[in-house]
Structure formats: C-alpha cells, structure tokens
Length: 329
Image (cartoon, rainbow, N blue to C red):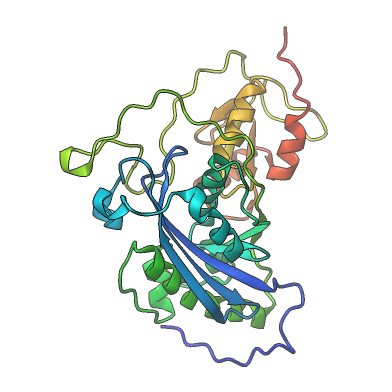
C-alpha cells in the first residue's frame, strides 16, 4: 500500500490542471455499440480531488439486462427504473464543466455518448481522463490494470465490485492520491478530447436477446471491451506504407491502438468508407498505425516500431482521411 501525505496545497497546485472532475462508472448490458446502460454513478470532485457529492441511478435498458451474474441487476429490479432520457438532464448536470474520470474511460465515455445520441442530445463533456493511463504516467507498480489493483495500491477497500456506486466511490478514493502524486511531480495529466456522438444509428434487425437463465447470447465477451466485428474485404490492393507529406491511398492497411476521442467504431467505419483496410494487428504489410500514445508498450506500437511502420496520432489521421487518393488504376 502506498500512503501519500497532503503537502501539495493550492499554492503549489499546477495551474494547468482542471478545476473539477466527475468520476463516473456505468454498468451495461454488454460491451458492443448497441448495448445499454443499466446503472450509472457520479462522484463530483473539486480541483484537488476532494469529494463534493455523489449520485446514483438505475436505468431501464428497455431490453434484456445482459450479464446479471456481473452487475446483479435483473429484469425485475430494472423494470420500474427510469429510462435514460428521463435521467439525462440530471446526469448532464453532474458532468457539466468537469473532466470525466473513469477506469478505462474510452468505454464509459462511448456508452454515455451513445445513450445521449439515442436521446437526441449530447453529454456536456469536453475532456476525459483514464485512470489506467494516469497510473502508467505515474509508473505505479501495479500487477495489472484492474480497478481492484489500483484500489489495493492506495489502500481503498472495495465493498461491491461491479456496483456502479461502489466502483465510482473506489475510483474517486484512488484518484485523489493519484492526482496529488501527479501534482507533486508536475506530471502532465493524460487528458483526451471528448467529441459528442452525432452519427448514431441503431444496428438493423437485431436478434432477440435471451436472459441469462435461459442461456444468454449477446455481444458480451469476457475480458474484452469490444466485440469482434467482421467487415467486407477491402476491394483495393495494398499500395504499401504511408509516406509523410503524401496522402493516404485506397487499399492501405490501417491499424489502431489505444484510446481515441472519436468513437472507435465510427473511426473504423470512416476508414472503410474511404477505401482503406482496417487491420486488427500490425505486420510488415501494415501501412500505418494510428495511436494517441506512441510511447506506450502495447504489442501494436512495439511491432510498428520494430517494422518501421509509420505512426500518426488521431488528429493527423482524421485530417488525412479528408483527402484519400484513389487506388492505382
């Protein structure tokens, strides 16, 4: 267990740090783009990570609740819960003007953004901070990146894992010493932009979901944040690697690694629509790797560097997507 003192005061606090945070946890029916939120919790923190208040709600997902064995919320429990549009304004008020903090923030942000898009609205979130990324910035000696490991490192006791309110409490209590450690060392916080999702469309003709008791079949995959998704093969031959200061060319193989500001599936959809191939891994044939964290030691970034594969960040890539050259005739 690491114990930090409280010597970091407002007088020595980095001026560039945010003025408030919303520590968030959502439990869901699964992990895919069409899954829904079944419960949500928010702990509001001030600039130095002190708790101001907290809020929790169940949400009726209007469908099978999914992995009940994980979140414990059955159809009977959720039947009388409010629909997401009914809690959207209160949820937004808790997020407004604050940095969204979550453990694997890309997942929580994408689920929240999709719910607001379905409700024909947008969450008032401009930036997010992933506590996994912050732990890496601080080089915390964690055995893995699970919330329970982060909590144990700071001596925070979990009471009900996968309960949104308790998970948010645990994360808030672990985030405060992480934030103070970052401030004492003047570490750059790993903030990422949150862009509201405006391109939502439900997937057509989904198969009925079956409850867990009868053999639950859904997009949920244990140990993975995203389901596998088959795409049609790219119709263009691979023209080779991307070259700096030249446009992308149809047929290029593009791989993605790490957190992205734009919903990952939307980014991949735009890639396919431009005539490029979405590669699930990096090989010598990969034309380009897109990542906002090129210094991370993920398998994709390590391979890209070993193969000499060009690497660009998301902002540069979205600019390149605007002018993709046609495939060679």
